[in-house]
Image 1 (cartoon, rainbow, N blue to C red):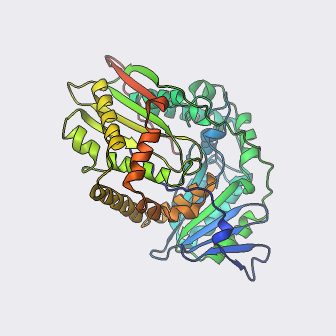
Image 2: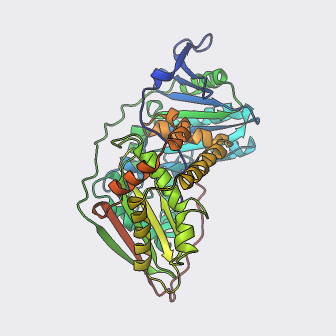
Image 3: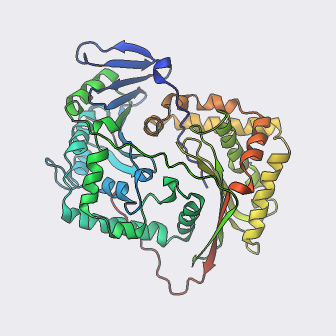
Length: 469
């Protein structure tokens, strides 16, 4: 399983590191924060909307992203999937624009756009030539407060989402296994439910559910705009004031903590579904930058994941795929940037003639090695160099630069520590790797899901229709 890419870090006060400069002339009502070492500027409108600009003048392009602090983890029982369905409906028209006209306008201006829903956020983006930012802001401001939720459009779009769920989860045995694994691993955490929602909840959703959700969460004081690329920060702030400044804020709801209960022993679940190959998922409860007792622990866990699954030279590929040949494919994944307790996951398919039990034992044996013997410094240096190089390469993309900042800010963590991610990785020691392996990768917090493949027979193939968003 691929590790999630976007660096997020523990919450520190932004003001402690900021150089504050009053904006002169066109922006007299606010104070700008400037972070010269990162070429980033922040600005907050009086209605609560935060605007973050990262200037990168290497190419005449820009990306504009609007991040809302709402996702599937905000949903309650019976309403799962509402954030994702609303994301679809955000393209279905406002008082000024008809259905899908937003997308047509962006395309006519030479840009591309889309949106995505996560557990802790929903985001919308446009990538365009630098002079077209006004077009993006004008129409994002329009649909932030003036969305028309047409019942007929909803009836069509909810069917699209249900078909998406059938195609991507119910007709995909590995995705079905992941969904069952996640539901077993999390009991009372809001991460228990899938982002796309349970089918029964989708079938019983109505347009009023979306209207209530939209009114509650889609407001300037619950949003962050991130712009990265060949732009001037003062011009961006001028445009933000012009198009978003008059939008009224909302009284957003207070969220309950919903802290995951302590796991007191191993959990197992078996999924029977038509499939060609068996598949296993394993996950251990681990801290993140937001919850760790020691701030270095998540970075040590991130390096540990790379030691096991950091390419062809990593231990899984070397020992389990090419060496013992117990695995046809195997991976490790960890997201140190979630705002809640996370899972350090392993997933894989055994080689022909080998069983899921063989693969599970082999994975646990690799974990045991890390617990009993410190990583050789040469191996650790090589892995850390790979991780840091990957982060440097990602910064070639203005989209990634904006994505990293937006995700950090929206989940309540400090985007600036994302800029310091490489330094934290470089500081990880062999002793720390062994410490987190021993402390967190133990059976008391382990959840295992096994896919038991059933004969495919005359099962219909997965339908491959795709939704626009």
